[in-house]
Image (cartoon, rainbow, N blue to C red):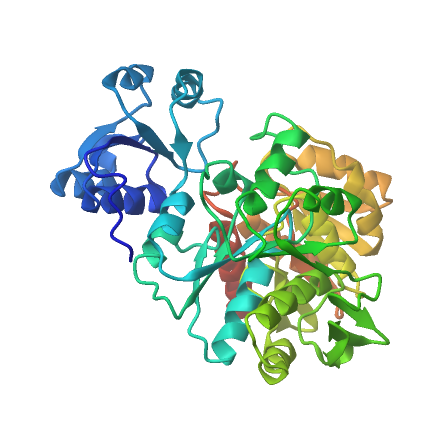
Length: 453
């Protein structure tokens, strides 16, 4: 860890705790800053705030009082989940107060290279594939970011001979200043999180921030199948490494005659890849491009791609019960992700869906429902998805209270050979704290069903 001095004696507000806020507050305190933490959860219900107070950090809990801005802070380190419409945050913006997220801190203190992965869909799978390929090649990588491990915590133990593989959300990338990955990846861009971002241009601007500080010594791995990404890539100073699932690219990663290729070199047969679903080819190609830049040999790549079957909560196979296969795709928090999961299966599907209502309709989901024989719906969007299901011609649509009730209900409607798929097409926050919690409840419900059967 670099023992930087830029925060020494600076008055800094850490806004919002959760994992990233706790790590950021402790790190800044260690770096000599005068840290104040502000979290919405009341102090008596907030063990993280209590621990930080014991470290000698000032803690203010129970609300986000706007008058905190009168205390002369020089910087705010914001939890990515707190929107810029929050009065305290918008007030800071009006005052011209710098606002960063903890990934900026991670970059400033790490001694390692960073591979940064962003995009609308496929970030977690791509991040995990890169990590596994580097690990198979004995390059001792570290994994961090939006995937669940705080980047500024991992950065504290990273060494110069390691690589940090970091998943990055648009929320995190809005709060960077000098952050610069050596290799940046943008998997794809579709409309998402427009309840957080004020408009589409703000969303894509946040995503393309991943390359704004890159130089000609760095690399941008980008999806050439999307014109918008190729237009955005024109702004980068980095070396562009393209990938495509549609066209052969002699200067990038692509597919030719059923084979995965990089810079014209054949890597392996597509048929030997264990990860299901055509949508995962984008993730695979971008991962291959990144690790080839890092000097990973084909043997390591082939080993991972022939054995890796997916990450938890992303088209994760759970169990087979009396000919019914259960899959957990709780990470499908938008329509495109759910559509990709649905299109990965040829067998009849009973779909479990619903969640937070972000104001959108689900007409774009209708084409992907062609193989769905029944819908089990829950959450705020149950009515909207039912409307889409009826438009798709689905005859069997029922509503339940939650995921736990959805599993036995789906089983009762199923036949041998069916797929029972949790792919909500919505965020979880109307009922569950995270998509991981939602997915774990699904898994537990499947195991309870097995036990009772």
